Image 1 (cartoon, rainbow, N blue to C red):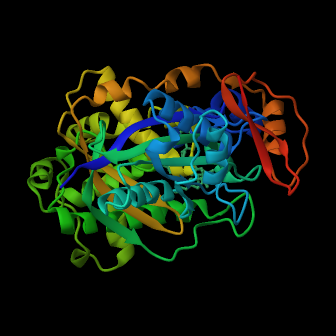
Image 2: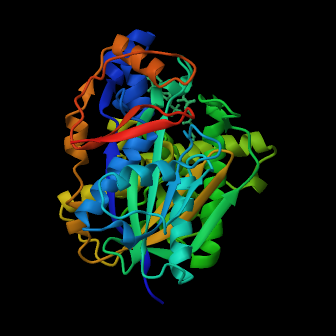
Amino acid sequence: MTAVGIDAMEIWTGKLKLDLAETFAPAQGDDPGKYTKGLGLHASSFPDVHEDIVTMAANAAHRLMDRKGLEPEDIGRIDVATESSFDNSKPVSTYVAGCLEKVYDGDFHHANKGERKFACISGTQSLDDAYNWIRADRHRGRAAIVIATDTALYARDDPGEATQGAGAVAMLVAEDPDLLELSPEQGFGSADETDFLKPNQQFPSVDGKRSVNVYLARMREALDDFASVSGDIHPEDYPLIPFHTPFPGMVRKAAALGYRHIIRDTEIEDELAEEIGYQPVPEAFDSDDEFYEAIREYTDSLTETERYQAWYGETIDPTLEISRHVGNWYTGSVHIARAAGLKHARENGRDLDGTELLVASYGSGAQAEVHAEKVVEGWEDEIAQLNIDEQIRTRYEMSFEEYEQIHDVHNHDTEADAEAFTDPSEEFVFDGWGRMGERTYKYVE
Ligand code: COA
């Protein structure tokens, strides 16, 4: 069976930075520890005045194509995943193709384009679509560009405001990939849930606490479903486990739950039992509440053990390194988690050749998906190309007043005129409005 997977990736962050501890927390009257320790976030990225989901997506895709020496004729498919779309009919991928056609001689008329929606999991679903298209041998030797792009804005003073972010991840999906081979096996946990909605509105209606619990419940189902097709999962078999990361504190909870769940009835549980006892079982309790309380206590003790902390430090913590500085990118979040983990592994000389990552995606509404990705020899060369550290470092840092202004600029219901904070160079920018009210774009040399 031909290997299919991610051949290369590029990341584009919004060019503005909001420091959460120094700027946001004092303005909200909050202790900075709520952000840096509780949520695990230091800063959020925002798009400048001339940036949006199209420019970030097109800029990431342009870098990807340029670096891989690709022309439009090499690409048979452009799929965009987003939950920040501004049009119910025309997909963002058509705008992205329009942008790219301004800088390449050829065009994308032959390419199938679409837009995927299922909250934050649609980036992973678009990867699936590209994978299936190649596997079905309908690709005529061409590759797919999959882009996850979002401006994750919440209404002012919504609890989610602390977790905002904006950026795009572009991935090239191809045969014999240079970075990661996707496993055919997948596990799903999917249910009709009401935790996060945008019923024809820009800012989400969120039941934040509930969304945390739904994430955990669906993730547990997806892990079980994956194990049913791949065989038992052993947490220490995977060098990295990138999770969907709305904020690192969420992953701290998901990792503890996942680890506890998959060590049940294994030798790891036996070995840990001397220190913290065995996991509680429902039959031993008179009520569900007592059982849940016991499970919570066991999980707390588990996370204090040396074995768990070593596993977390090696397998999970590195995947959070980008997210801490950019916030939630919705559809892109699990993909920057994967990139952060691989980047950290390269910088620390870890040998990942031939190992498998376990990738855990999630979207509110709600669905979790788990699959494995085999790391291809030579992966370090691909990862070395990422310039996300430099992008993060060179963002313009906003004052709180400037943040309020930028929030208004990107609020579809307010008309805010503001000067850009950064000077665009060699990138696509938002250029105004066309005759049918469409957004227009140009390339700035
Ligand atoms: N020092 C250290 N930790 C602190 C703290 C301080 N000074 N103040 C608060 N914290 C901790 C809290 O204990 C909590 O951690 P815990 O959940 O492990 O107990 C964390 O910081 C967040 O504080 P909390 O009061 O729960 O925040 P909140 O209620 O304002 O908002 C969300 C949290 C997740 C509900 C909110 O960010 C949200 O709605 N986000 C959008 C939805 C989302 O991302 N859902 C995730 C699934 S997709």
